Length: 143
Image (cartoon, rainbow, N blue to C red; front, side, top):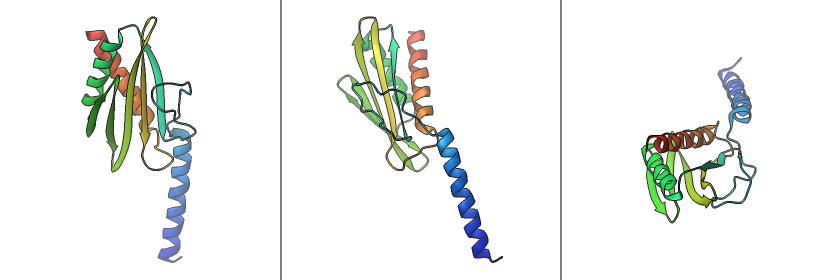
């Protein structure tokens, strides 16, 4: 077979493999309830969670902002009751939002991470959200 045919077969195999991987590994929105950060809708390139904490909103917000900055984001901006950031995954930019709401028992931390381009992210945003929430838990348990 010609080099061109082999290149076409390789490209097709790579595309099918990527599709299978993205369907099985992509981020999935985990929370659809109304909240201070936008929902993910049906896009698998986004992850969004709401995590309860027993600490006050100011404590959770400080820990979350600190965890977000420490995660290596390339841009960071504090907002009223939260933060906005830009994170990178290779050449791709993702938008990360966090917000904290007061509850009767403490606080609710909202975290959303979404890719700017494409429909799939191979689980990058879900992984980022899990790492960020774990980092907030760790910071709050130490303080």
